[in-house]
Image (cartoon, rainbow, N blue to C red; front, side, top):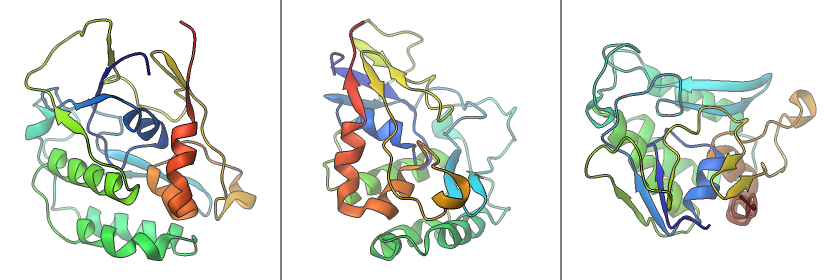
Length: 217
């Protein structure tokens, strides 16, 4: 990547496009001082179900209109969202080739109660680095900057939809791979990284990295 530093939001089980950028960034910086942004992957991920794409959302205290720093945003644990999310993942991916290989690593995140969504998301990001057998080289922002210099790739407003394909000097083309319900639903691109991990296992890393390539600006 031409840009040496990349700023990204702290997403919930981020999509493949997030990881294509994150794995190739020289300096990966996770934004922790922004306000909570609704309708993004900060509290939502997308997975493949029997009838198509499923959206899993983490409820937050104060609702969508509650304005506060994302790092201070608390999860609404009155709702049994963790149980629902884990049951959904098991139902969707139990037949995948590598689900059982990763199951024991993921399960604790959906049984232990977390207070802050940022902490929950980031610990899952740490886990994904480990599952991909890559060192977690990310750091955090020390304050909020509205804009960054040109040599910094600011992706805080990205990762709102699986349709996004351009990230600074690079272009993302969603990798194609086997999905359990693909014959019924058609291929669903750029879902949560769990989708490609459960399907491709040790081959997921190379497919994710190859999905991002340089473009002429």
